[in-house]
Length: 407
Image (cartoon, rainbow, N blue to C red; front, side):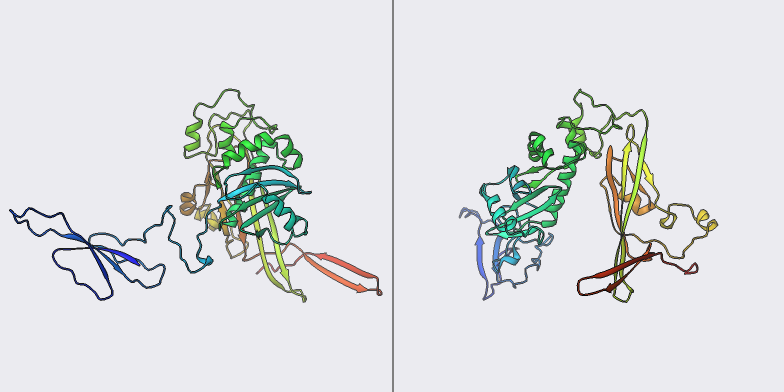
């Protein structure tokens, strides 16, 4: 039922379907008659079965939400498993396996799964050769989320209804963190040679199954084990960082202070891929472009950079746009844009400029997708001839598209 708190003075109207519980004040002395004091009525009413219907507001207050259950989570419904709460990750264990199924390293975060859960993964997934079918498998009461990186399988075991996309994002970010410590490589040999460092990192990036800080710039402040460094980077200092705690909890946690380079350098790469779906007659059914901007920054201090993509998104003045005619009347619209945490989103929304304080080293600045006005770079025309029952000749011709100048 729903609980509604109401204030009344001396009488209350009772409904036939309601149950009334009153909390009266302590009895007064019979010598003096006190004025009527309001008492609290707790009315328990039969509410409709709508799960998200708000409660009636009390006098002088805002509408009350549903009372939380024990543990702070939302109230669960008893109608079925489909109404179960979805936790962020809540990983019970993580395993690193090679291609043969041998455990290279593992870490148990909760006691709700046994240490032999990896045997179920080998028996039901690896031995049945179902590794490439689905990255999520449920065996018994646990779910196995696995991903292959080089010659290593990373398996996350969860016993509750976890967020799968968040778990795979954690794996990708964790591998990028390991590569920053291992000099850009992550394979079976790197795990065997750095297992002590991996155990230390696993304790920092996940606490009781919940992901924590995975930023290499912050973790390198207090996990100072040396690895293979880039030849462009500055010489590591043996002195401890005096304000490591301030940088971990500060606003610019992705870049540490005091960086000094003899030569300031910035490298920028734009990587785009065209996804095309064509019919048997050669007509284009679907076409889009996915791209990302990769940067390598070796700059001193705390620089504030500004990146202009093109003049179609307001990066130049109107006078310059009018003086230089555009090749096409259509503007380039970017869909599904995602930025690095260093980008100032407020300035991008107002000025359409990408302003940021870059992290030190290599990072991915942004990702985007283009679905309108995509010009295909070339065209593939296959020709197949059957020369017999056991022979076939395939001729593939690559030609460029010819677009109209006036289009």
